[in-house]
Image (cartoon, rainbow, N blue to C red; front, side, top):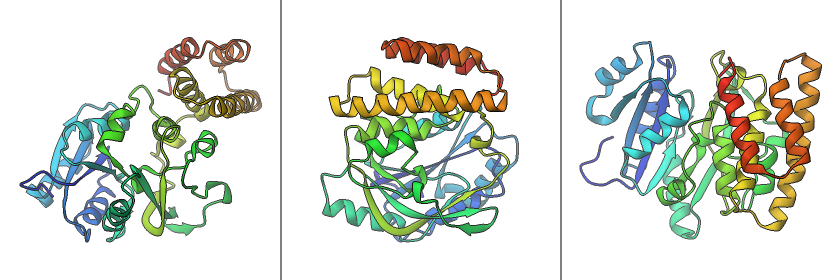
Amino acid sequence: MVPSVKPNISVIIPFFNRAATVFRAIDSVLQQEYSDFELILVDDGSTDTAAEQIEQRYGQQLLLLRQENRGVSAARNYGVQASQGEWIAFLDSDDHWHPSKLQSQINYLEKHPAIRICQTEEIWIRNGKRVNAHKKHKKPSGWIFEESLMFCTVSPSSTLLSRQLFEESGGFDEALMACEDYDLWLRITCRNPVALLPELLLNKTGGHADQLSGKFPVMDCFRIYSILKVLSNGCLSPHQEEQTLAILNHKLEVMRKGAQKRGKDIRDILQITDKIKSERNFLDHQQLLQEVLLQREWI
């Protein structure tokens, strides 16, 4: 909804050609037990009729923004820039919340004022059926930087974080067309604990042909870029840096073996990763890797 006074929470839903699912996401926000929020939709250059249908169906219940197709990171950042809330919640257009999601998180944060970001447990839906998450994807809580190096341990659709924390961390990296959430969580978790509510308050949907994770054959390359970035920004403790270097070397080797096994031509990327292993100039290598990523056809 679009409140007449400054809301406590700003809910941001980016979407691109998701007329089949975005209405369920919107309805799950409007049906929240907690009502002190504004709802902002960001159309990332859709070519279907979702935006027009949203305007007709919801009118003044939400704010609809439009931009040229620039990716989910730019869409989320645009939504935050246009928002007013002290707290930020993201919801992917193919996911949906349970009615008590926001209220449960606000209740928790009011009792734990030192916490600046929390997430909830979730139900995974794949191809229309509920599936059990693998043990390795079990969500940790507290100081989770080490766990966040290996996997994306925070679900954007399950989080509620302070505007101040989001802005301090620099928002989503718009150069990344995949693993943008992994990138942000690294920058946040190296300095902040993440609380986890045990309630299943999100239905997280996957298995779509148009999901980003299915479009990029070298996903770990994006994660390596993010690891180099966090190594170069000077925010890590000596122990965190040691952990990060170990994971970096592991991911470099996994990517090399995977590329060789699949016969992928990523010689340009592998040349950079060889330099990373022999040198410690993380900022230069991060910039080189970014240039190569942006030049590839699958970007």
